[in-house]
Image (cartoon, rainbow, N blue to C red; front, side, top):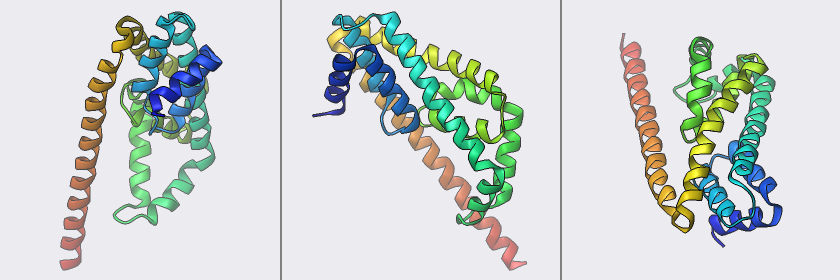
Length: 204
């Protein structure tokens, strides 16, 4: 059974609650793509299992639940622990964590809102929000707006396309892979630059 068959079975069994549950799980475990779950929720709604409005509300609540869980994980981890872990990772340092958190403190509102539209980032952005102790009401507002827009778009597309909902999956699969490639290239470039910088410092 593929992930789409599994997701449909859950939604048909649990109804709109199943759609929300799947998105909550996806929010915490990024390998489960919302680009499949959301159009499927729309498609399932088109079969009469529940309404489009119900699917949007349930999936958005699911997104919020998952995001809040990661937000509190960030609070539990804290800057001190992240700095300690960073010191143990090759080519990283506690200073990198400080710089990242300083950037997030300045641009956190934009990051939390726009991050909901980017695969992987959609989940991970909640952690620095918790570490930075962004006010929970603000975090909930930004998450609700961002996730609500993202979920509405794909649920409606799944509903309109019906059995052709896989068109959305194919397009977003390309989008997701492009994001992953960009991230990998960026990480490699940063790693190469740091290795060169350390070699130059050692030669002095």
